[in-house]
Length: 442
Image 1 (tube, rainbow, N blue to C red):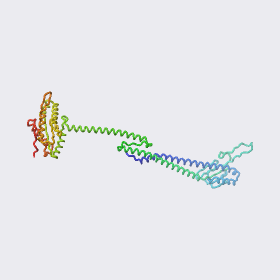
Image 2 (image 1 turned 180 degrees about the vertical axis):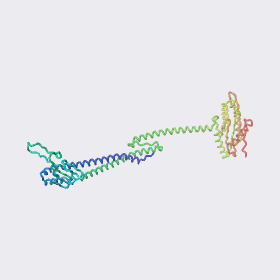
Image 3 (image 1 turned 30 degrees about the vertical axis):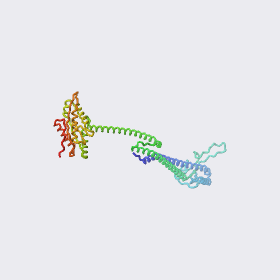
Image 4 (image 1 turned 120 degrees about the vertical axis):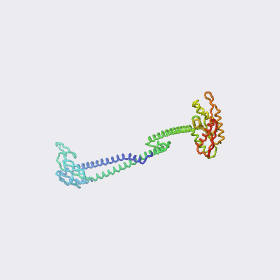
């Protein structure tokens, strides 16, 4: 399984960068909003302080009806603060007594309380009250000068109105916004760079681990992850190496078990084949093995034009042996006969038990005369080998049919039939004799 590192890198980048970017954006918005409100409040406080200062200076002039002094006071206030757009001083009846600059018509209502209006411009309307002055008469009542903006119980004498431009405030807000955007952009870029670095490092480590996993998938169980170079993925690298080691051990054990099972199956197969090709009682070849070898020898004789003979043998009166002495004795007689035949034939000859008491011998590279002589030796050897049962010697005989392979004979069954026919002629002659089968008729 191959991992798509590009997709993993993107998801890691998003998981790392997005929260940081969101926090930075929220902080930037919060800072801009908070400091914007503070700058507006600071401008209001400044306007109120300027209005109180102007009111304190204008109260006596207004009371004395000094219009020129009020005008000079308004002009001086305009010159002292470049943000002022206009200054006006009103008497108690709301009539303007002095002004400088431009004061818009939409000023707040002139009431007994301080009025602050922040809309398109900042307008402050400061009520004016007479200030009690201290006297030198020690017998006079004790009075105190009220601080600006304090509650007054005296008669209202007028209002000082200031109108301030918001351009400086707007400029400060723009500068704050630019600074906030620049800071946020820098933070976002830094977060993006750090997220890219983290994603690159992690995906590089994952890629190394993935390559090792892919090698293991292809069967390279000696592959290991470099633990020291795995960084934060070190626990995963250690776990994967441990898993690979367990897989290697398990596979080695499995291979050993497979090899052992294969060897056992091969041995069982060979034993089964050997059992199928060998007669379990006598130890000579089975009918199946005889058929395979005989067909192969027929093909060889046809190809190289060599001699090939066949002996068909059947123990005489064998049924009587089983009936009289039992099957155990009969089996012992069959084993004894097989051993007698094996002692008489060559190593290249094949002795087989075809079934019951019937045996056959395949004789490559031997003539009919030689086959007849061998058959006679087998007959005499078996007849002269007494078999003892309960201490009493028993004599057995065998009838043999000999058939020479004829190239005109194309099947094994035909050849066996001729040998079998010769065997029955030997039994018909009185048993315990050898009979040669005639050649195949033209």
